[in-house]
Image (cartoon, rainbow, N blue to C red; front, top):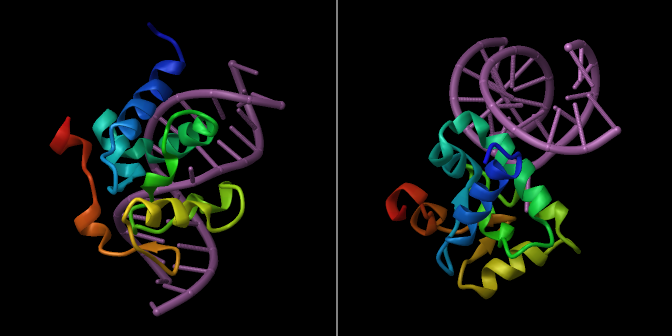
Amino acid sequence: MSKSEDFFARVYEVVHQIPHGRVTSYGAIAAYLGSKKSSRIVGYALNAAAGTDVPAHRVVNRNGLLTGKHHFPGSTMMADLLQSEGVSIKDDQVVDFKSLFWDPRINL
DNA sequence: GTTTTGACGTAGC
DNA sequence: CGCTACGCCAAAA
């Protein structure tokens, strides 16, 4: 173990376990991993997750804002994907984010 | 080994 | 209500 991919792998696992039509935040994942201070690391990991089986579009910031949508191809792909899963997006923000919020601590 | 950066978060002004 | 500044951690240069 002791591999750098370990931290990334954990992020991938958590994100990959997000139920369909649900959303979570970087801080929630980071907090589940150990420290919510690692929120930035989660985003960093998701950046490396691009091209993997990790649905990074289900991960938004604490405000439910699609901060990472700029990293997706196009400009509405992330919002489109979420809406395709039943998540309503308004002004680059998840509608009823609080209700759609999926906390890894609850399921894991 | 040091420096920079980053898809965050919280606090302060 | 909006922007700035700082913190915190990990990876890449």
